[in-house]
Length: 240
Image: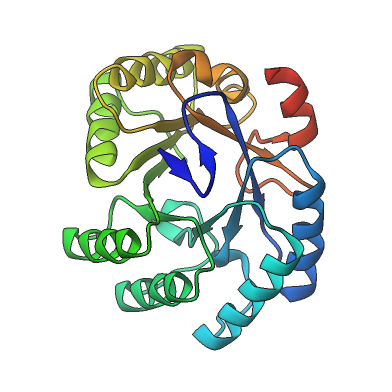
């Protein structure tokens, strides 16, 4: 499995999110991302301060591309999944369709809670452009029981080309459950998995996740996009 020309599964891949609220902030972050240790860059579209039309978003995407040539994951994280904005299914599909048609991303993050029709539409569109789907779920309040966690990972992997799960641990056992669940499901499926336990308690999962079957980890530039993210250069040093 590849995102752009970056292979997943051969080594731990580093992903850095861009969370700028406007074009100037995004371009500044894009320059930093290009110079960083990151293998992949995630554009968090939900962080844009105002809801922009597709044409404006595409224009920003083109500018972003001029500053950063690393493979780009397009992500609109919804409020329900810990993001900054809500969005309708119709607008969600239209936004991603526009980015795909303009060749502005190498992967799409599609949240697993969307109806099957939305997920299948986006998967078909993405595959027509040679772009993989990351099917994701985020539990910002808790860590599901390990059986539920494992079944969630199986569903995410089956719904996309890559499965992604983030949980919020309250105890060390929650972190162990996340790592154990990842190890179990990664042995069952051919699809790559990206998993993490958030917050300070889960920080070890961001460093050692590859030992349990997670193919990538997220690090931050100046501003973290999720609790517990480690600065990207520090993370690169830790996982060597």
